[in-house]
Length: 299
Image (cartoon, rainbow, N blue to C red):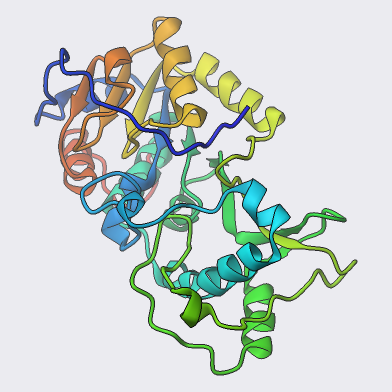
């Protein structure tokens, strides 16, 4: 089953519009045991674009699929050329108020866990612990032949050495770390192999068309079962990899609250959708709960 296809989806017209009052978020967090499910919208205020929000990259960019990456050496050259530049942007990104709020809620014992669909590592950089990276992380690389994993920074250094002077100006950066380059800009970019076996290297992320590892999915399902409620932050829930946990929570009678400026595919299963920017909404929630974003952990 393809768990990360690019889907066409039309918002439910019979659902009420989102509210601008974050009190529902305050209510669920106040009871504790909240499981957070975050998406690309949480990282837009850190300079990493969304896929489907206003100005989302899907309007100009088709994400790499697993099938294309594994079957076509030219596709891999394009990906690594673009990814080499995109990684620099990801490396400079810093957690925003939304990430810091989630970390603060965790420190104060209000969360049961965090599942993120993002691959940018910003939850961990903000101080969140035990984050489940549903789609993997761009800061790791895996060999498709021997399975060896290595830090992305090591590959970045090897690619820089193999492609001295490679510095085209991209048209934009995408949530998957892929920079927008033309074929002419990619040119004869050199891809380097695995240092262990000479195999094909791939970022340790779940590409579109690839399946999320079953054990990771089951771990997330267990977290949903153990949570008292589900708080969705910045995800359109257009792909099933995240939507299934919303359906699971709602199906078992657990409250689902979504914070996303635009309608989502999960709105039908939620108590409400708070249509506010993530940073502002979560900062307001933290204030109402007397949670300091930068303070020490609660006693």
